[in-house]
Image 1 (cartoon, rainbow, N blue to C red):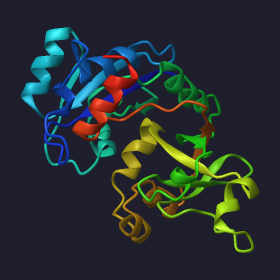
Image 2 (cartoon, helix red, strand yellow):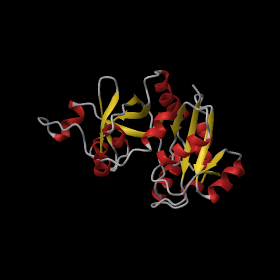
Image 3 (cartoon, rainbow, N blue to C red):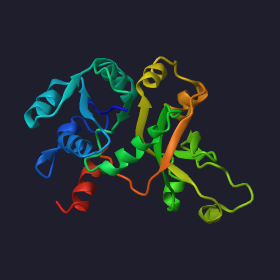
Length: 246
């Protein structure tokens, strides 16, 4: 089953414009993401998807592969769908976040392993929550799983609500999960979900995966022990530089 890794990369980030091109210890962020993705043993090809000539120039400089996309996409998923149509012959598409310069290739391989089951059409990663601050942080999407480790709901709110337990004891009373934002889709499913209209739950929570659930799609998950640091702001960049000792 041929797998294509796609890294959506936008220049016009609201909180950190031009972040794919920022220097991280001598390499641009987009180069670091690309090299990490290429180290995955499960991907047959990796492509950077962008609408910006400055990013294309940088990708050419370090010898990466890229695809020029439209500039009006509302999400990375939509950008991936356009690229998937350009690159025929790949049965599975892995959508890799372009702002995680030190993503571990093992994460990509773990997600890819979901598609060993031919019934899986959509997949993502989750991680156990062990910290109280994360549990009640509305910027961290939470996930509820069924007994088959399929995601049945995502929310920025802490779910499930433990009715008969004091909040300070929630972590001891129940296992909560947070979403790790890397997606896999069969090529056919990717094209299908990008044709769906925004749903009520998606608009309420501002989480696109709820659109898929509302339309009856099953989302398989794998539980990971690892988590990459995303660079969303200049402050995140400072944090990651300190972590890596730069």
